[in-house]
Image 1 (cartoon, rainbow, N blue to C red):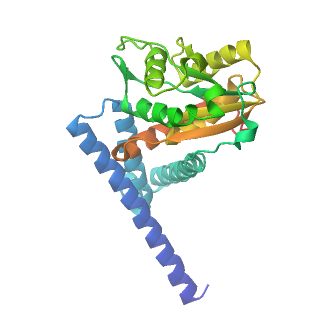
Image 2: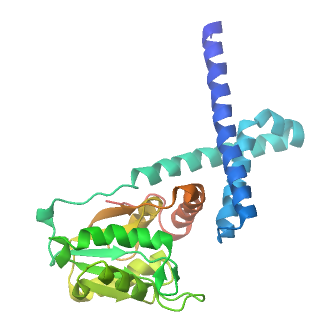
Image 3: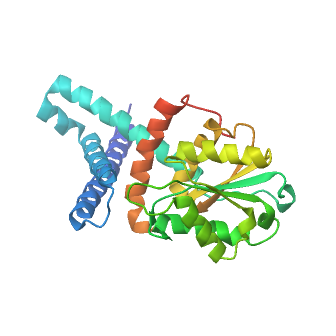
Length: 278
């Protein structure tokens, strides 16, 4: 390897270290500020964000880690932090690939072959939370127009310990208020997880029709895992399409970090590692 190639390699390594350091510093600082401000109730998401930032910083400073922990322990820590960073960035890319809306041509959709599942989320009294409102707004914009105004729409979500109504009932009321025909809306009000959302929604859809198409509605960061969970919980043969809704931009680091760990959990404990998706 000549000097020119060595310099290129050193420059690349330096840029990579700064890239990892900046990501780590951002996640760490963002998580701490969010915790101090106390405006986000999910402490686990904050902890995961701060912890991820620490690991990215460690991956950027491998030589420092060796000096602090010694050669052998430092080597193990560096290996683990490298694997962590690679897996995190890989899953992040997968989330992005599935984060957009993809709907079929209108000619493939009708009331006899398509079901839409809107995944539930937290409600506050008789109002949807902000992330759930985003989902419902995205769905209602489509459900009021043909051919989607004739498909079966299942709203999902039971009642949490700190909720006064089921998520499904609040979701239906909100959609009706947006002009969606109430006769096409079915409520699934027993579930407590994404897995149960799809399992119970499949039971409802099977009692009405055997759909060829499934349209999943959720926030953009959640669509990859939602598609995977649909496959694992009843919708094995349907063509799956997605309606993507946004989330407040200032919460992106928390949502995406938490979702990455949720995907790890799904891969390890709820499915084969690379379950067929489409």
